[in-house]
Length: 320
Image (cartoon, rainbow, N blue to C red; front, side, top):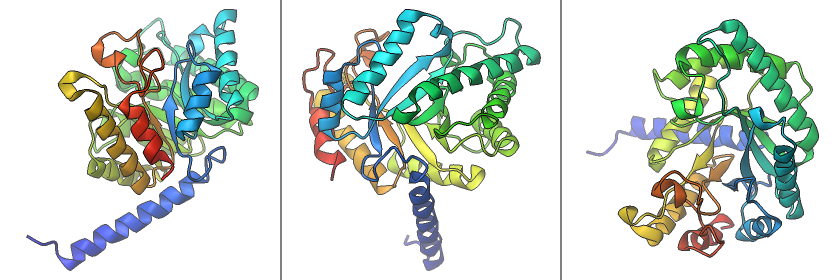
C-alpha cells in the first residue's frame, strides 16, 4: 500500500529537520573539516607514525583511541599516550580520545559518597589530559559502553552511573575546557525506556552544558534504524547523535573479507547520506590480543599491516 501524502510530508519534514540539526552539530567539532567526519580506531600500544600516514592517505579525518584513568600513574603508560599523540600529529590527524576506568569506582556497591568522589577525581584526570593535548583533540568521549557490565566494572548501572556521571559533569562544567565532550559511547543506541535513555534524561536535564553530542555504537543496525536513532536522540535530548564505534569482522561465517568490505562500503555510504557529524570505524588493524576470532578480525588491515579489501573499500568511498 502506498503511503498517504500526509505521511510522506511528515517523513520529509523530519528528514529536513534532522539534516539541519546535524549540519549545525558538525560546527561543534572544529578540528574536523566538513568532508573529514569519518575516522578509525587504533590502539595506543601499537599505533605508529606509519599507521598515521596510511590512515591519512586512506582519507580518514581522525583517529580514535582509549585512555584508562586507572593507569595514568604509570610513567610507561604516560609515554604510550604521548607517543600515540605524537604519531597522530606526525600525519596531522586529530584525535577522538575516549576516557574511562577499567577498575570499579567504588569499594562498596552503591556508595554515593564514593561515586561522587570518584567522579570528581575522574573529571580532574579528563581536565589534565585535555590541558596536555587539547590542540590535537576532536573531542573527548566520556566512557565506552557503560551499558555493558564488561565496561562498567562498578556494576549496578541503574544505580551507580548517574551519581558518578553527575559528579563528572558538575566538575567539568566548572572547568575551562575548550574541547567538546561527548558521552557516553553506549553499546546500544538510546531508545524508549532503555537504561541509557533514563540516565541521559537526568544528566542532560541537570547538566545541559556537559555534553555536545550523544555517542553510541550501532553494531548490527540498518540505515533506517540508525536514522531513527538519530531522530530519537535529537528529539529527546536536543543534541546530535554521533557514532563513536562501528565495525564488522572478516570471519568466514560472515562471508569473509569480501563481505566485510561490502558491508563497510555500505555503512560509509549510509552515514554520509545521513550527515552523521562524527563516525569512527572499528578498527584500523586486526587485533592479535582479541579474546576470540571475532574480536581479532575487525581490522581494515591485517595485524601485520597488509591490505584487506575493507581498507580498499574505505579508501574508495570516504572522499567521494
